[in-house]
Image 1 (spheres, rainbow over the protein chains, first blue to last red):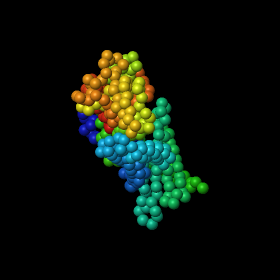
Image 2: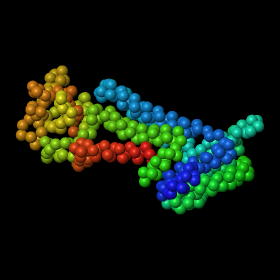
Image 3: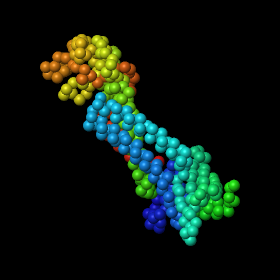
Image 4: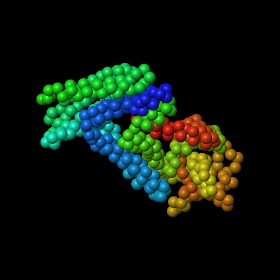
Length: 193
Length: 178
């Protein structure tokens, strides 16, 4: 990477294009960026925050077990350890359930504020996955009104090669185009009865 | 390669970074809780130990891994292979029980010897100590797996390998975004 290049645009994101996770994370961030900066959506962190909360709880349980066992060496700490171990693995199960059934690959939940302030917020959920060995990036956008009656959904799949150049630099404008098109398509969709 | 890692880190926001740290914490906690779970299950402070010496050959060789249990209700008998700790020594010893005295109130005293040693263990015990008591026992050998413990021996003898491996794993987990 030349020095001039980094001087011209500090925000350019260059990644290792053979790394699926890096590709997905970069694209996800870019999509979210478009929703927030271009359409003035407000990000709703509650989905992520709950996951962080469960994870923190699991780590705290383990830390507590370690501390308790340190101050009350083993045979004495048996009961507390049993409880902690059981609690820890239940929490781990809960995290797995949460990520598979609640998050389902949703990487961004954003709220579209009604400027007049009369109507409640509209929720946009963006989720994605990359199919391994095909390099296809599946992006789904869901628009929900506040009561959840009007749910519109659209999915596109495009090769990751569309969004990155040969060097692995993200083409932000392509992402922005795609998101714009998708958003309009979702808005045009008829209400699913 | 390392560039990519740092790149990942640079583009994370607060929550992603926190999640990264938590993931690292959960990997460590999982290992810890599996260990504690084994402790509860086996009743022994160290349910898995590696054999570090050849004093029990041909039963156990250097580098074997032993699974221990230490259930209170099971009586200790002569001929059993036990792992015990001696005051003033960090590393527990795996040897066979040679003699055993049992009192009616349940307390026991025992003498141990390595199968491959020519004399009993009194020379190994703390100065003046003739017998071991139940509190010195870490557990009884219940099963073994050959060769796996060689990794432990290597890491103990060359601590640099241990730190290098730990540092590499830690960096990978911390820097590589989930």
